[in-house]
Image (cartoon, rainbow, N blue to C red; front, side, top):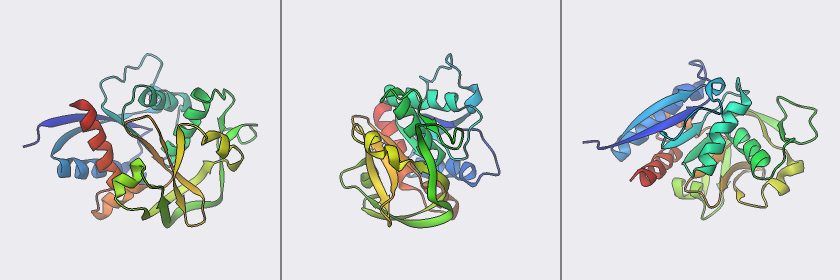
Length: 235
């Protein structure tokens, strides 16, 4: 009997044609079944996230792929809430990019930080085109030991798929990653593919899309870890 009900927010503009949007509810349901939980999902369109939007009812947040979003500021508001209120958070692909952008603006105080897809000529484009676009690509990822993501996977070497063209701008990487935002996964070429926040119950962001495994019947470890973190805080 499932006794615990969790409420999760999916930050992003739902599009039924986006594979990740098809996969994420499946991934979370698979994880919920494993953990014997009831999970209620609500899509939060970015243009619905105003300064007056109350997010306190959500146990956790997943910022989903398929950006640019209709309202960047709306997405950043929800990410900031999850970060500041210590609510479990997972960001994948576009969610990774916007988690980094939110951190740059509101933790580092870089008011001029921009996403290079929206402002390619910005002086501080912390998110920039990848040297090689990872569209329908897959690669091995080496996880940093003793991190949330490594704990979730139970191993340091994983293989994941991508559909992404943007990542952290190397020009700003050192400054971005010298504080509480830490690198937690690199691909076979040594490029950054995952980050997480210290001093937070669960705040993980990946450039790869682990949710896609759910459509092949494999439950993504990060979906399980996200729900476990929500469950731990809801008790």
